[in-house]
Length: 117
Image (cartoon, rainbow, N blue to C red; front, top):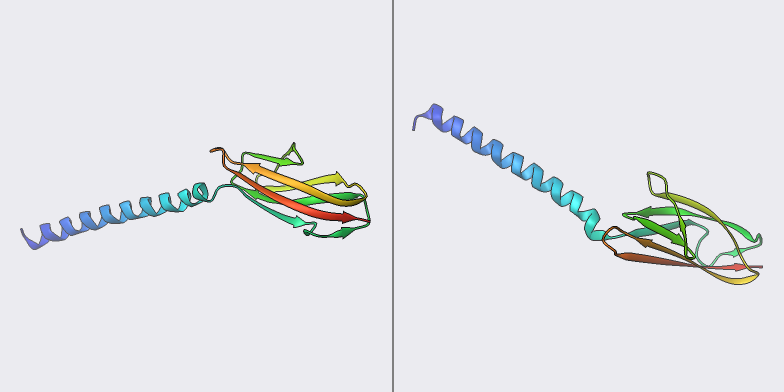
């Protein structure tokens, strides 16, 4: 093989390897969200909060979800996964349940314990 053919051959092989590496890396990056499953993060109120008002706003972010329920009732998120819902508390100790489900049937639950006085 001449030097010119050898250089062309090396450029082709290098290009193919780089393209395969980029596609493989992107595939692994995207597969990470599927492996994590649903994630619920509540920003307010904090777990264990003591509140004086019976109307409380629950807000946070839910990622990798298809459905999100607050105490058994479906709620909705925006495009970024943010949710905001108002809920009435009973006097005393309250447990609020957030349940998320992804398209593969995996579930995540978060419980908030709030005291209304």
